[in-house]
Length: 181
Image (cartoon, one colour):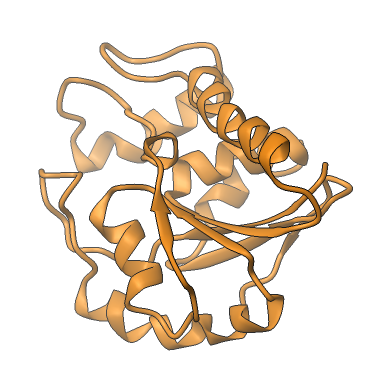
C-alpha cells in the first residue's frame, strides 16, 4: 500500500430510528478528549461517513484538521430494509460474520460492504502516496475491513470494539489497535 490508514469508529451515539442523523450522546461527546493522541500521527487527510455521529466524532474532537471530506462509501453497512429488534441485533451481525456472502432483505452482505470500502481505498491509493489518512466510520464497516487485512479480526473482536475506537493499517497492511485505554 502507498499510504497508512487510521480507522476511527465513531463515539457513543444516541439511539434513533433515523440512522443518518443520529447524534453523539453526552457520553460520546465526553469521550472525545481521548482522541487527542491522534494529533501525533501527522494526519494528512480526513474522510468521514456522512452520518452525523461519524462526522461529529472528528469535528467535535481535539483532532486538528484542515478539512473533512464526506464520502458515502464510509456509511454504515445496511443490515436490512426491515426493522431488526435490539434483541436480534447481535445474532444478526454474528450470522453475517459467519456467512459473509449472505444478506438480509434489502441489506448488504459483508462482501458487498467490503467491496464498497475497498473501492474507496483503491481510489485513495491511486490519488495519494506516503500519506496518513484518517477514515471516520462505523463499527460494522470497520470490522469488515479489518478482517480483510487480518483474518484473526473476527466477530468476537468486533464485539470488543469501543466507542470511539482506533486502528492503524500501515503501509505493509498490518493492523494494530492504537486506541489508548
